[in-house]
Amino acid sequence: MIDNTIKYSYTNTKIEIALKLNTLTIKNYSEGINKKDLPFVFEQYYKADNNKKQEGYGLGLSIVKTIMDICDFEIDIKSKINKYTTVIISF
Image 1 (cartoon, rainbow, N blue to C red):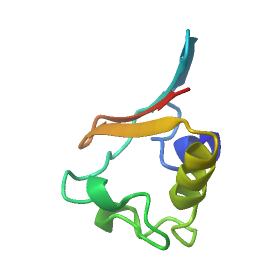
Image 2 (tube, helix red, strand yellow):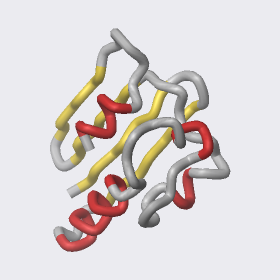
Image 3 (cartoon, rainbow, N blue to C red):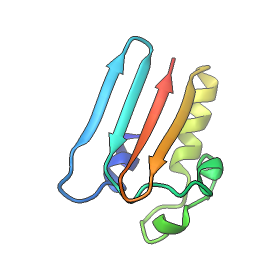
């Protein structure tokens, strides 16, 4: 998750990581993810249209989701185009 956060962040911006009780929140300032892409970001090989120029195979988030499911954790992604993406992991 941290690798994706760094990879898709704007250059020279901060990344916020917070742990509160049973929730881990990771936020970057980036191009964000389109609403139409959000339902598919955990599918294998899926790359959002605005992220196809980035290196990778589209496996990162599907691997994270598989691990979260095995551990019985929940993961959610909130994003606003040209602003930020926030990943919330509840355990």
